[in-house]
Length: 182
Image (cartoon, rainbow, N blue to C red; front, side, top):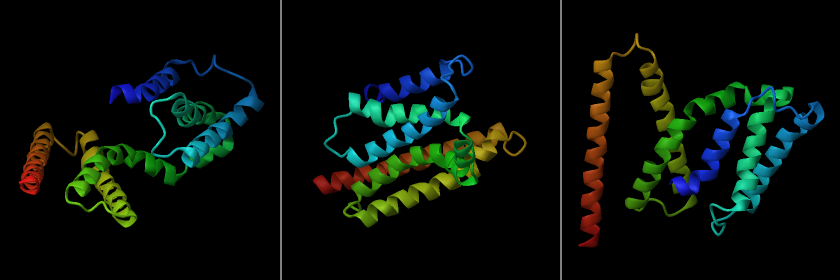
């Protein structure tokens, strides 16, 4: 995964390391750059398809550089501050990591049980991943951050139960795959 994510990791590291105050380009240019970032991201959504080689210079320029421009220069634009700071985007941000973690096992499981044959099945997987990420945020992430609500013992118990469930699901999937081959 690291070779294909090199650009993303490097871009995030670069943004984290540069000094916000010393990297000034002027108000007019800084107010245009987030829009240029949105344009680059939008272009990548339109022109990229399964045949696009990744990683490549194009996958760096369009989505990654576009995202960097939005992240770094949006703070200077009242529109972007209000838009990206809205409750909808804050909510998306809160559950996005859980979605990132859940989408792969949900989509993989759907493929294993041969549920991944049309666009409605894919949409169902996206909705299931979103629901799981919301549940994860409210019942795992948020309480785990509050030491008053959850003790270390309770946290380790939840983790042990989670590992047990993952192992159980893995065994079921493995048996299904073996039965399909045999």
